Length: 76
Image (cartoon, rainbow, N blue to C red):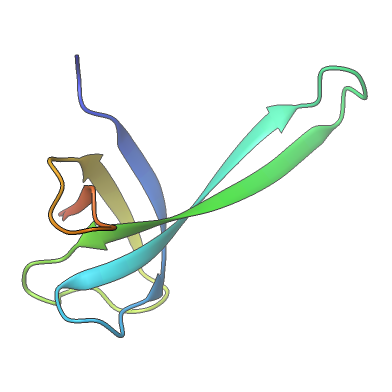
């Protein structure tokens, strides 16, 4: 099965080798036919602490790195 790749914005870089990425998705509500924005936060592994708050990054699924980290940041 292919690994998922998501794009989002870094919202936190306070931890070593970890960034929090907020990923927004848009979809049409099935009944109201209105476009809805939902966001979800993912914790991703950043080996060199290269990314700062506000950066747009792409993340890819990986094997678990810790209790909460299941994603890695890939260079744009």
